[in-house]
Length: 246
Image (cartoon, rainbow, N blue to C red; front, side, top):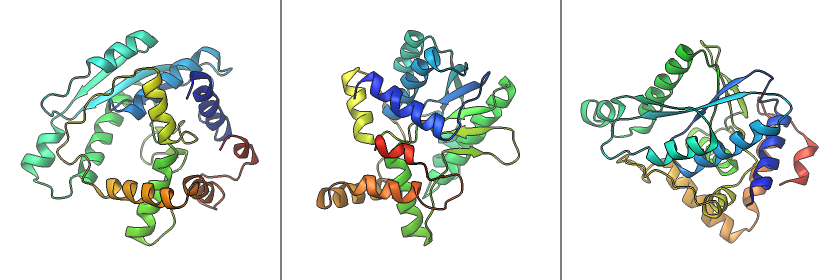
């Protein structure tokens, strides 16, 4: 996927769900993975020509795992002229060594988001962009169906209770295959995930399951995504504009 195509997808999502207002200060949650690096590239470019002017900063929550090196992220931020901040924590130690969680992801995510939101509020930043893409929308929907018995997924824009923070997800029209293609074409350098639970979660299982279903039924990913978009789920509005890009 070329840069202009990425800009087109992201601007479409931003416009369809009113993700950005003039004067916004937006923090990009950067884990160091391919998805967040692509989002960083997209919003840094969109900032130059989008009619509603906004500022960016990139933030990484360091969970305290040994060997976590954010140098590639720092270099990309310097190249894109986006200020970069690292929030140091001991979340990894708490989750795996102290709590000894058998299913660590929920607690880790809760603590990671808490550390991020606390830091953003201190900085006076009340909008954060996450790098959830089209496949993530589908994975979340399947997780909800399989493990909770309900049809649900996250919203394009989420307003967090108890804070003034809003979460936006500008990559929802971009497939994971396109993310990978962009990462390879522009030689982005993801940071290796040092988490011991990486690749062993329910989400990993559902991801593998969806890949198999899509191999047997080509095009099923886009049909499942349309099922979410065209549903009555809160925060998702039917919009004929997306038909031309999916």
